[in-house]
Amino acid sequence: MSNASASACKEQVHKFYSSIWNENDKSVIPEILHPNVSFRGSLGQQHLKNGHDGVADYVDMIHRSLGHYQVQIEDIVAEHNKVFCRLRFSGIHRGQFMGFAPTLKRVTWLGCAVFTFDDTGCSSGAEQHGLPLIVDIWALGDIKALEDQLRTNKSLLHK
Image (tube, rainbow, N blue to C red):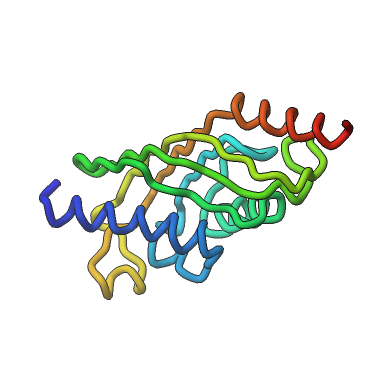
């Protein structure tokens, strides 16, 4: 991967988190994700989501459960057609989530993600900017730490 294409891939990952997740703007999905994208997340009932609609459903599920949901990229590395990120996730637990009733408390946990890019496939939106599309995402979070926070927050409500 050239420096230019590594920068373009990193730019797409930054846009994935800043626009889709932090701003909850799903209108940019076609500019960032391949139509047949595979998304594996560690939260929710079904961990594998396919296509734009599958990713949008996952985003909606997280935002319903966690208000003010944010993902902060703490480190990002690109090589070949892949980008790796070390991440910090946070939100206000405002809806049923992972079997826990809302606590209205902030939860924060760490994780990472690996993105795979298709250098040849571009939607009309991405093509205009010459940016590659993401074809596969593996996002993993520290679920044990998240569950511990949810459990602790629940017990604080009952004191």
